[in-house]
Image 1 (cartoon, rainbow, N blue to C red):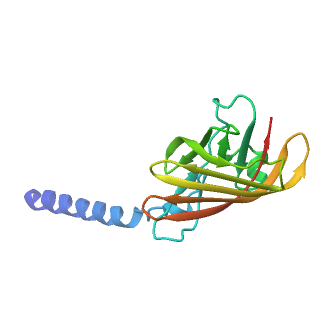
Image 2: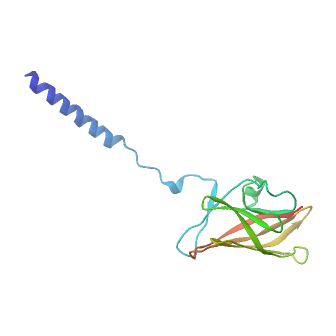
Image 3: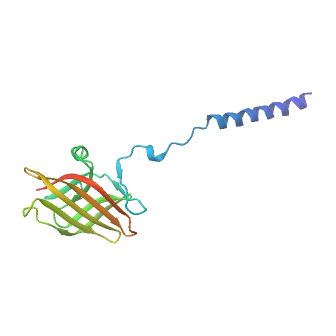
Amino acid sequence: MKYIIIPLSAFMLMACKKEKETVSNPSPADSLSMKQDSVTVDTVAGGKILVEVFPFPKEIKECSCYFARNKADFEAEKYIYADDAGKTAYMKLDGQRLAMNLISSNDMEVDEELSKEIENENYKISVKGKKIKSEEALLFEGTLTIEKADGTVVSTPIYGECGC
């Protein structure tokens, strides 16, 4: 009799464990609903470009332009773009911190418009803005457009300043 009870008990124990595993297994969290400190913007073409927040670059010593997605992020120093007002622009795209050469930048003293073009082998970036306030530094609102080599294009609003 005990030869029957032992296998039967083991079988019942395993059956209970299997049932327990399937009942208590929670559904995985949706990665899109998790809060991240980055900006994912809508695309015109099929792919996506992840525009991430980064601290102010240590390489920039004097005059600079730096932008966040909006005024609240700007005040919290959550920058998505910075440049040294002439040579190099800094961004964090698709998980990589990039230092790219400025192709062109207009003279902000001439008009109320800001325009910058940045390019490397993987990205072409355009910054367009309009001056909203003049103080020690000039405040701008505008649009940052990023085009990836594969044709993916994203646009995001920006808010920030240029000054020395």
